[in-house]
Amino acid sequence: MERKIELCSKLMADKGMTIAFAESATAGWLCSEFALTEQSGKVLKGGITCYDASLKESLLGVPHETIERFTPESQEVTDELARRLPQLIPADIHVAVTGLTTPGGSETPDKPVGTMFISAMVNSTLHRERKVFSGDCERIIAKTIRAAADLIITALEPFPNKEPV
Image (cartoon, rainbow, N blue to C red; front, side):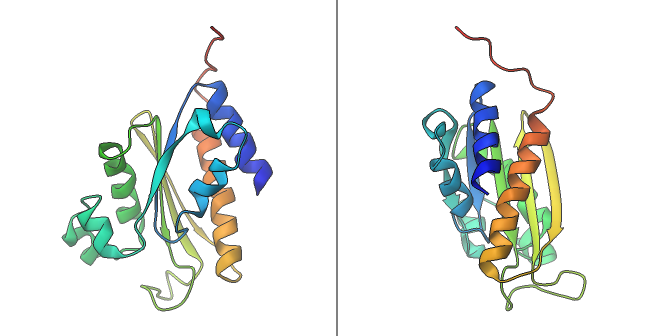
């Protein structure tokens, strides 16, 4: 996992870009992985952990109706988190993650435990992904972190590196 995050962090630093997170199911682990990179001071702005649905509403302003209609662990809510995060943390990239790492949430046969949603706003363009991972909670989160790094790297490919000053 470290190598993927390190590559992602270096790519952002080379492009002069910063990142912020709104995390639910990963509970801050994604942000902390970026904090461990050599480029953390250049790229990481911060993160918000909004594990409970009430924080998605009160802190990030996701409409209650959206959460009720789609559930707190859904692509629609994750997209809203990524869209609303810039109001709280200015950055070039805003990443949101929700999902089901353990039983007891909104799982269904179509959305089993291991279903994770990742949304990234990069220069006003929304990149999103739904993944279904197997394993225990820790393994699901680790796989989600790698998938988030892959999504960010792919989203950054069209942007040129910042010219050295």
